[in-house]
Image (tube, rainbow, N blue to C red; front, side, top):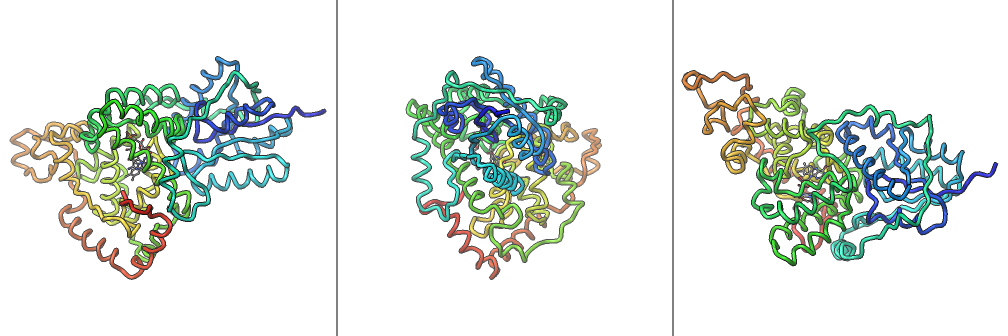
Amino acid sequence: MVRQEVNIVWFKRDLRLKDHLPLSSSIDQDLPIILLYILDSEYVNNPHYSDRHWQFVKDSLKNMSRQLKLYDHKLSVLEGDTVEVFKNIHTKFSIKNIYSHQETGLVFSYSIDKKLKNWVGSEKISWSEFQQNGIIRGLKNRDDWVKKWYAYMHSSEIVVDLSLSKTILFKSKKFEPTYFMNLGNDSHIQSGGEDLAIDILNDFISNRSKQYSYHISKPNESRTSCSRLSAHIAWGNMSIRQVYQAAYHAKKNGNKRNLSAFLSRLRWHCHFIQKFEQEVEMEFLPQNKGYISLRRESNPAYIKSWEDGNTGIPLVDACMRCVKKTGYLNFRMRAMLVSFLTHALLQNWDDGIQYLAKQFTDFEPGIHYPQFQMQASVTGINTIRIYNPIKQAKDHDPKGIFIKKWVPELSDFPTEYIYEPWKMNEMERSLFGLKTSYPQPIIDLSEALKKARKVLWSEKGSKDVKNGKQSVLSMHAVPGRKEQ
Ligand SMILES: Cc1cc2nc3c(=O)[nH]c(=O)nc-3n(C[C@H](O)[C@H](O)[C@H](O)COP(=O)(O)OP(=O)(O)OC[C@H]3O[C@@H](n4cnc5c(N)ncnc54)[C@H](O)[C@@H]3O)c2cc1C
C-alpha cells in the first residue's frame, strides 16, 4: 500500500500558533500536516522537571487545540520516546519534511535531537530547524550579536494563515497521552496558554507596568507589578518578538522608564540563552574552569534545611516556601536564595540548581544555568554579590507582610523581631505570649557572611580563576556592555 505523504510540525518549547515560522513554512507546502507534540519520557523523568511544568504545557496544548478547532484542525499529542514516535508515524504515513524551532536545552534534550537527526538522515526525510528569539546557533563570540538581535526584534512577525492548510490527527494506542490525562490541576501554579499570555501582556502594558521599576525587587508587590510572562515566554506561548514589539510601540505613548526597563530584560533573556547555546558544558561545569579545583564539601543537612525552607532565616524560608507552593519568585529573591546557599552556607552551585529548576514554572535552562552560576559567583567575571537576607527583608518587605504570609509561625511576632526572631529572649516571648515552632538559625549569619566575603574574594583572586577569566570573556562578553 502506498503511504500518504505528510509534513510534520513538531512543537517543542514554542506552544503557540502565532509568529511561528515552522508552522507557516509547512502551510506554504502543498501537503497535509500532522501538528505534533511529544511528551518524551526522558523529559518527565529528568530531575529538572516536575508536574507543574507539564501542567503548564497541558494548558498550553489545550488552548492551541481550542484555537485549531475553529479551522477544523487537530493537534496530535503523544507520549513516549521521540524517535520511536516519529518511526511509528512513518510506518503509517510517508514523512516528507519536519519543521521545528531550534531548542537550546539540556544535554539530554540535545541528544534526543541528535538521535532524531540520525534517523531522519537514514530515511532521507528533511528536517528544517528555525532560529528562535534571535538566538544564533554556532556563534563563536558576541561581536555583532546585539545588533542582530535588535534587527530580529524589529523584523515583521510571521503571519500564520491556518485557513490554508489541511491537518491530519495521528493517534496511536502505543503512545497515548496517559501522563497528561492523569495530571492533577494545582491552582497555585500559573496556567498556560497563548490566549492567556496575550491577556497578561496587555494587562501589564496598560496597567500593571506603571509600578514596574519601583516594585521589581519587592517579593510581594513584584508578583503583580512585574509582567509575570516568564513561564509563557519559557514555554513559547509568545515569542520574544511579539512581547518586544507590543512594549516598544506602547512606550511611544508614555510610561517610558518602566517599559524601557522591561524591554532591556527581554534582551537579557536572550543574552543568557545565547550563553548557554554557546556553552552547554555549563550544565556540568562552572563557566570559569578555575572554580573546578575549588570545589567545597557539601553539607547535606544544610542543603535539606534550605530546600525545606527551614533555615531559621525568615526571608530565606519565606522565599523557598513561596516558590515551592506557587512556582514563582522575583529576580532578587531568586538571587538571594542562591547567594544564601552558595555564600552563607558555602555549598556548591550544583547542590541546588536542579531543585530550584523543579520549582520554577518558568524553568528555562538557558537562563537558569548562567544566572545560577553568576549568582553563585563561579564566573570570575561578575561582581560578587553577597545578599544579606536581613537587610533584604528590611529594605523590600518593611512590614514583614511577605514573611508573615509564608512563615506563619512568625505571624504574631512584633515587626521589629520578624527579621531576626532569635533576638527575642524567652522573657519577651512570654510577655507577648508567643509560642513558635520556627527553628533557630542553622548558622550565625553575620559570622557566615564575614567568612563568605573572605572565601569568595580569595577564590576570585586565585591563579586558576584568573586564568579561566579570559576564555569566559572571549566567548560571552558583549562588547561595550556591562554584565548583568
Ligand atoms: C538563579 C536564577 C534563576 C533564574 N531562572 C530563570 C528561569 O529558569 N526562567 C526565567 O524565565 N527566568 C529566570 N530567572 C530570571 C528572572 O528571575 C525571571 O525571568 C523573572 O523573575 C520572571 O518574572 P517576570 O516574567 O515577571 O519578569 P519581568 O521583570 O516582567 O521581565 C520580563 C521578561 O524578561 C526576562 N527576564 C527578566 N529578568 C531577567 C533576568 N534577570 N535574566 C534573564 N531574563 C530575564 C524574562 O523572560 C521575563 O519574563 C532566574 C534568575 C535567577 C537569579
